[in-house]
Length: 559
Image 1 (tube, rainbow, N blue to C red):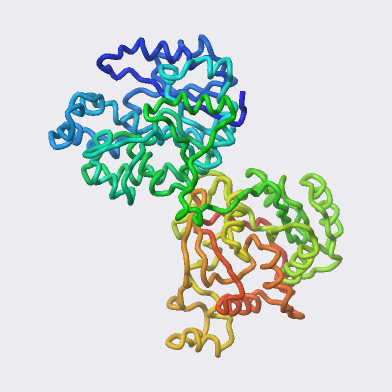
Image 2: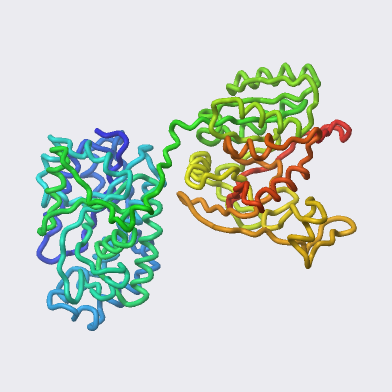
């Protein structure tokens, strides 16, 4: 069994003419013999059949009645039922009016929900796998069951699931494809459609399925709203034409039988269709973060309980305290605090650097920058000891952005690899400021303020100016469901992930004897304007500033 693959399927009795449900049950019985992680959407009445053959160690049953399918499909239900009963639709071809998609109210809602059902399993992920496929419960109707049971052919599948995998077959059409108007399909695809992607076997990695689900939803919604309907295969085909570099294909024969692909898997002769030359340049970068090294620095002063409180928040998430090189910069001047911090470092696997003096926030920040530059780490993240992370439960900040971001550690690294940013700020909303406001306006020299904002270059006499300039953003993009923006993002001491080259440009090429946060903010803003620095920020607010212990005002030092 490939422990890194989950197979998803579903089965319901919708009263299909010419195929009694016993026919499907016979093949489902063969399906249950597959030695793999199975996630099954089935009605309650089929549960006993499953547990007579399967173990809970590799089987998850989601009791899902037809009404549950309807609830999932609700945004499209009325449009689907309206279209399938319209003469203008079912009279496009002679066969269409007698087809299951026209005659059965449940047929299209089920097949057009396959993508949604698969995507949901990537979220629940009961077997903690990286790859997922949908495999029709009746697949052994066309593929001999011993391919799956004796040959274990699915164990060879995951190398082809890094991108999203479809199986396609050639298709010649004049008026429609599965009921979807042919001219409309060509228009959506941007070219003449000459193949159809099968709905019986498809899938990929978790993150590519999540992306595919978004495109699928959009295309299904748009096409139904404009009066066009085929089956899930019509939408799959459009996805493959629109982004062939993401949705890779294995070409079946004209009969469309999946067995050709299964035999090719068995023989190690699977060759995917090449990415079209005009799309090769769009092929995404390799975002494999497995071998990246990241240092996590925490600056603390005199309060071990504050440090431990913050560490416990990161311990709720994967990787922050396991995949990083962890360094504590201990500014404490209380011997008892230093001794307790040593115990905490041993507990959490931190290197304990005792500075011997209160360097202050910014000299501590600079210490981390110099220490990192001499290390073999690729990136680093700097935290003050009150910069925790929000609990992994849904909530939003005052600007409406998410506080909880699943797989945050992995995704910020992928963004840094993809975009080659110098730094990526991890929270849009801060305690006193929001990143849609250009805080650098307050701190740049007056001549820069006049040059950049000639019509608004006067600082307030005191306090903040509600009408101060807003941040200029260049691009908003999304990776693995996390949205981010780049542009004239201001620097501050809030947590960020920083690259090696970025660190050098930010802190080391130009140094100040007594660094202040405002000085760095001004300098980095000017460097960004010159094109020398490339910053970005998440459109999310996972960082939770939570100070539970307070030191005396005279003990607070900037440098």
